[in-house]
Every structure is written in C-alpha cells, then in structure tokens.
Image (cartoon, rainbow, N blue to C red; front, side, top):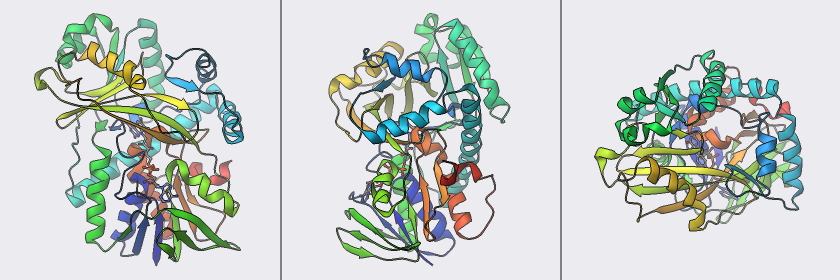
Length: 416
Ligand SMILES: Cc1cc2nc3c(=O)[nH]c(=O)nc-3n(C[C@H](O)[C@H](O)[C@H](O)COP(=O)(O)OP(=O)(O)OC[C@H]3O[C@@H](n4cnc5c(N)ncnc54)[C@H](O)[C@@H]3O)c2cc1C
C-alpha cells in the first residue's frame, strides 16, 4: 500500500514511522523545508499524563470572560468576527460541565499513558535521542486552597493509574534545590515520577531520519493546495510540486486540517489556540531546575532541554495569527527570573509562537473518516507531544485492520 501522509509534524512523522515499520510505501508532504517547523517546533517539551486535564471545565467560561478586559489571564479570548471560532466556542461551552470535563480527562489520560509507553518503545527500537528527562514533573502550588484543589483533582488521574507524591514547601526545597531560595512562596507540590520531558523537534527530526533510512519519501517545501475527492474516495493531492497520488491518505496537518478538508465536504471541529515559548541557554547549571514542571498559579511550564531552558505559557483564542512581540513573553520571563534567577541567560531569548490544534472537548480526532481512503490523526491540542506515538500507532493499527490496544471509539470524528 502507498500511503500519503499530509503534514510532517509530530503526528505526521510518527504515522510515517509506524507505516514504514510495517513495510508500506510512504510519502510525507509538508510545506516547510524540514519536519517539525510549526507547532512541533518549540513546545513546552512535557510528556505528561499528569497534566492531561481537559481544558473545557466549569471554570473555563469565567476565565475566558475575564480575559476580555484583562491581559494577564492564561487563557485569552479575542473577540472577532469569525464564525468558525463561534461555532467551536459553543461546542467548547457544552463541554464545560463537571461531568463532561471528567469524562474528557479520562479519555485523554488513557491515551497519554499509552502513548508514553509507545514513545519509550520507539526510542528503544530506533536509538534516537531527544534531550529526554525521566525525572518526573513537578506541579507547583502557591496558594493552600489551590494546592488542596490540585490534590483533589488529581484523584481522577490517580484512579487511572497516574502515580503522584505530594510534598510541602520544605520537602520541595530539598527535592528541587533550585527552588530552595523561593520555597516560602509555595504551599506545596505534586510530583508525578513517570512524566517525562524532551525536545519534540529533535525527536521528530531524528525519527524522520529513521523513516528516510527505511525508504520513506519526504516531499518538503510542498504546500498542499487542494485535496481531490471523487465520490467516497480521495484521488490525490495538488501540491506546489505537482499532484501526489496514493492508495490511502492520513491527514496530520494540525491546526490547518479543517482548512484543507472543508472544500471536500468534511468539517473538522478544530480551532487554533496560540501559545508562546521562549528558549534560553542555561547560564548556571547548578541553579537550573533538575525537574521540569508547571507553576500552576501562573500556568507557566518550564523544562530543561539539554543545555537550554524552555518556558511556555498563554493560550490565545485569536485565529490563525502566529505573530509575536517581546511583550508576549514578559509574564513567563518574570516567573522564570523569580524561580531560577541565575539559571539562564535571560538576555539571549529565542522567541516562538504557534498554534495548538484544539478540539472543543479535548481528545484528538483519529481514525476512519467518512471518506473511504482518508484517515485522520489531528486535533491533539495542548498535549500532542505526549499523545503522538500512541495516536499514530492506533491509527496505523486501524488502517491495517488490527484492533488497537486501547479503546479508540472516543477519538472518532463521528462523536460530534
Ligand atoms: C506553546 C505550546 C506548548 C505546548 N507544550 C506541549 C507539551 O508540553 N506537551 C505536549 O504533549 N504538547 C504540547 N503542545 C502541543 C503539541 O506541540 C501539539 O499538539 C503538536 O505539536 C501538534 O502536532 P501536529 O503534527 O498535529 O501539528 P504540527 O506540528 O503543526 O504539524 C502540522 C504540519 O502540517 C504542515 N502543513 C499545514 N498546512 C499545510 C499545507 N497546506 N500544505 C503542506 N503542509 C502543511 C505544517 O507545516 C506542519 O509541519 C504545546 C503546544 C504549544 C503551542
């Protein structure tokens, strides 16, 4: 079978890997000159079943509402005339009940845990390196009530097998010595020992090399202009390099997926949610964090990736704009300077912004589409690095007529 994979981000390249492993002919198409140049380029780097909570929650509507007149919220809604945003927003609101939030979180954490094991298996099979850390994540709480609520919420993930240890500020200071000087600012922390971190771009590039060695063709710098449909079949894709035809097609275009499928009559409820990251060289390894994690009060994630410190924050509901200004990074840099004042070269920031492909309920859209030879692997939102290997394994298992190792019914497009 010749499979054409649309998109060379985390999801496209991992799909290509599993297909090539089974001996199939694979062509991967991307408009960028190398894999992982868009959302998979500089994410927070966390592989965290311990952070698999669905964003649509009872608290989310108020946070979004406040963001209309405040700049300092972690989720920011920008009012604009965008029917796609409003249609998506209504579906998001419908998922903001406590019951839907719990159900969506459980679906996500099962996929995350499965995927973490698959990421380890792919890494062992291929020998690729990606600045991996297996120190476990630290979720930091400043306020005692927030800490109590965090522990209460965690019970849902614990029931799904995610291990955690809680610690007070004193224990935190000896567990993560880089925070000893600011321990008084914290009520406590949750440590999830099996969460991991690493550079998603390095992983994707290294896996793409493995794919190439196994005969996968990468058609890069080839913008996809149109997908051609005839009846219930895809007949090819039109690219800047001309038409490309295969037997089956896997859509892994991240936030851009709905733009390419709308003209062929397939509506995908995915909306781009912009996030920002800054990467800094480590200046003083002694004071750099040994664990990765999240400052839950500020929703700033931090991870040491080899000799760099990566910080990320903010979710802007503002359409397909990927521009950024230095002021977009002030909040996360302020938090990092407070926590790790000497760890990084704060005068050498590398800024980045990109779009999380968010579904309104949270779980990605994977598996069969209503078009016979088109498969979906998209909409992984804020946690697509964690979910990538598991998702692609599931999609490829289904393509080859095998039953996936976890229940994939919750990921089908037909749930909408
Ligand atoms: C700030 C931020 C922090 C994050 N942190 C984490 C984290 O810590 N842990 C985690 O698990 N996840 C994280 N994520 C989410 C994760 O990065 C994404 O879910 C994941 O990268 C999505 O991968 P993808 O392959 O679907 O999309 P992409 O990486 O965007 O790949 C899609 C590809 O499609 C190509 N493409 C699009 N349109 C066309 C076209 N017309 N023609 C040709 N090619 C096209 C693009 O060039 C791109 O390469 C974060 C995201 C953001 C924004």
